[in-house]
Image 1 (cartoon, rainbow, N blue to C red):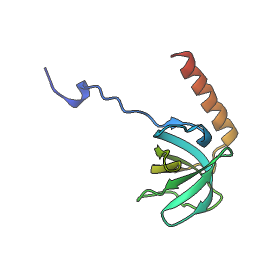
Image 2: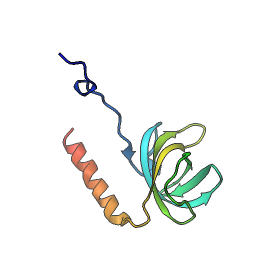
Image 3: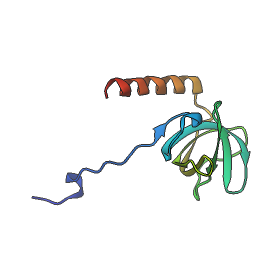
Image 4: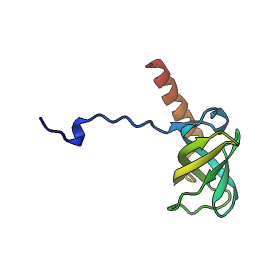
Length: 115
């Protein structure tokens, strides 16, 4: 019997795709929003429902500037304020956000039906 890593089952919690306003508990989330403000170490994004301060990871392959749309993956703390410790940022400027949101709603409804 082999003890290879492939035989072990690891379960890593996925990033939950959500609107910023729906985040009520600390956890791993992915959010899409437009950059409305920037500092040296953080940016504020707005998803049309609420704004969120996100830290900028050390390595970013996206040109960050006001007005562009991004998707951020990270851990959201609730206290003292809602803030994301970002691990990854994607450029979402060319994504059709209406279609993206409809697809996410469909995916979430399918998950609910299968649980």
